[in-house]
Length: 362
Picture 1 (cartoon, rainbow, N blue to C red):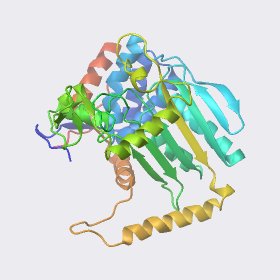
Picture 2: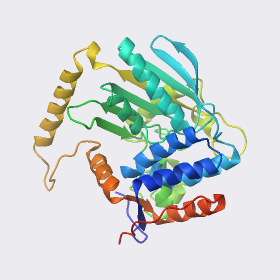
Picture 3: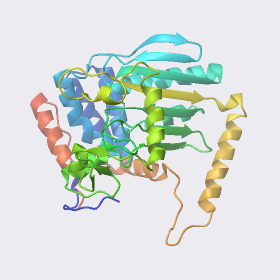
């Protein structure tokens, strides 16, 4: 757990639809076309609804600045540059990555229906954010989905101290009985870079083993870790997993990998990100219904199994986020007060209407 050294983070609450429209309109004002802005706002909202605000509105100020500087081409749309059988390569054209990712979901799902399984890579892209959202979309079509992505080097290899790897997340989506699929989304670093960024802002300490400072010394100071490097998850295991994901996202699509992405969001030229999408149709092995039923049985069996001392419930990955999503759709979405202050400043600059705040939680 992150140890809070500052006062409790202050939040405001907004209607979900108001937040979506506000983010969309702000990106349009900063230079994005409607289609790109709607795709990006959709994924950012999903992150906020599920409590992953690090990849929601909290990140939008950086996106606005990158649109202003031309690092992200707000008018660019993805295009298929290579297609053969059950595979395809999409060029993101350095636009908002969410639109390229949603196109990848559409193509990989259609191909999996036709061929049993399919792989789509995205090159020349920017960040696509909460990859579990894409794995979930694949699984909602009755398919098994696996999504991976890379990014700038922030993580040191096991046995090293220099930034060589991204946090390289991976997400799985599985159709199960009922309306909500099983979704598991994780970074291969000790903590995600966004969590460390927020902890640094609020001057919070991090757990031992989270990372090292610029000189390679272990530290729990989030600011020093940002200057140094994040540790891989579970030492050599996380390192090996991150390296594998990097190879599937970088060399496979002709995208940047490791140090080649070090200039992202900085000055000068840098290679762009790559992403990996895989879909599998259970119908080619068993039946979709049988797969969903057996998977649901296993989840229920695990939840009914013996619990550790002082544990009330065994939670399956994604359960908490889905419950929070339903609650926030009705009650409004929590946004950090500081994030809202920055966004309001950008909205004033672009003359974008600022939606009313529902409440300020105590």
